[in-house]
Length: 406
Image 1: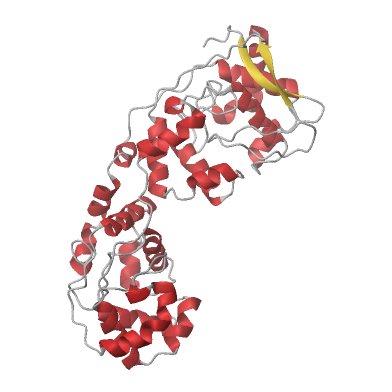
Image 2: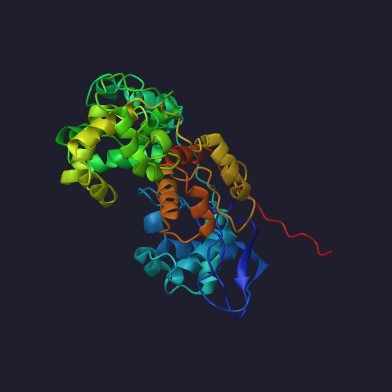
């Protein structure tokens, strides 16, 4: 859209302004300023308004977002062609301190409402950013996550078995675990919560995305008993294991995120219990139960669990990127081209920026109950893939036309 065009957009008018709108992912933003219900009304931006908006942009916005609205810096969003109603409302959120972003707060703090309207109109009038050729990261993000997990787990097979079923005494099987537990366990080695120098070295280079893929790959494999010796009195072990069923399930088959123990290598089980007992594994929930067991009892429990039949973990299989995008498009428009002036367009947006804001919503650092719920079960790998998806889409400008009154 050329800057000489007349742009219809929505601005907030009323005595008491309640800034709601949508955040950069389309979720409804919690009102941050009390007041009477604000009304969304149509307003036109003339060529003169847009020219004045350009002067505001040059003074307050261009150093980060570019005078053309195409950001060059990492984690900084493109704003060319952004939906003007959304853009205006977001500037009001920043003015009120609702983002906790000092640079942005300072940039817009003293701008008048008229200036906000005009700079919103100016950036909305520009041609939207167009996607760059797919990067290696974007190409990798499109890969099947299970296939990616198999590739990333290739180095684990020597100790843990090709498909995660151990054939080496003392080495744990990796099948049958809920992916959340698997990720937490590996991160415990990374951060030293589980003290094991070799494991810390081996997992330190694994990215969050690869770790998510590996966890999914092993969770999808057919579980089987470890192919290792399991000496001990299984009957005595079954009796001793009765107290563990509350967390680890009957027969060691967990129904939650606690690890399943069925089919696990007996020697590894004994080593883990010893580490909980001496503090090499920092876990308050396990320290007391482990401390109450003598070596013989632990051996018997290991034999019992090793001979139980493992079951696939019960977890919700992650949605594909296409399935996630379908959900997002309900608010953000087909391929991220919003037709709601209060919802941001995502098409051709910087992938690193989208990754940043999605993670912020998932953690609750950006306040939106709708977006936090939407992203609660979405992994880092899925976020990366979803961001890459929208970064590849062609951005399309939307002109809003007022409907005649009935």
